[in-house]
Length: 302
Image (cartoon, rainbow, N blue to C red; front, side, top):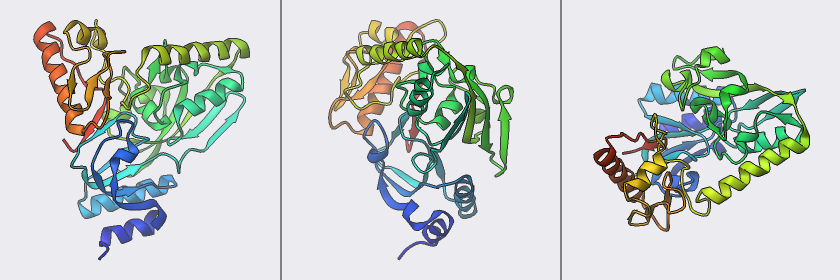
């Protein structure tokens, strides 16, 4: 018998956008994770708000994700609602360097489109696998660029269910943090402003960044990108390598031999394998160097 919550979710976002007992390995770049009791993919800001209201009214836990590129879900899965802002909310409008884009759009696709149009400033984002919403929340950056350098505002859903537009200053974008994270807001849309540049130089920078990713990162294996935040004054990958953990393996999970800052699914890893590698790396680095490695990857169900 279908639950009352399932029926209410279907009324809120449409039956096609509500799945039961959905395997989360299908929705994470680690390619691991148990089932989500409910998996909801709203098509609008109203759908996001209504889903969260239903969860709160029914006392059901919920977690908001993008495309799962910075996420580790336990083998036991999640007993509540996974709300995914991704494929159904990816509209992008661009006019004379002003870009308005929904949170579910892939950042790398937006960056590629902008760069091909001859606008400079988002070359750093080509190849970053997350969504725009996740990128804004964590102030994604690479190769000397950051979201805070190009964003002008973001529209968010507050914990109180209000839709609010925050300007760049109000977002308080820092290293892998923002007002969005601190106040548990949900990004619905973002606006960026870029300047016209030299098309050949822009494409050359994009190509250079892409080449660097391919050469330095273990893109041939499932992972969640950089596993750890950069500790102040150090590089996580070098600390891990110097601790003798290059290639360290538990089950199917491994510290990448190509880049020690990445924990990869070498083959048939479980979420527990990956978590065990992360935990043991943290313990060894702290014991050896006295440095605490914080995870950049988000965890669900542990």
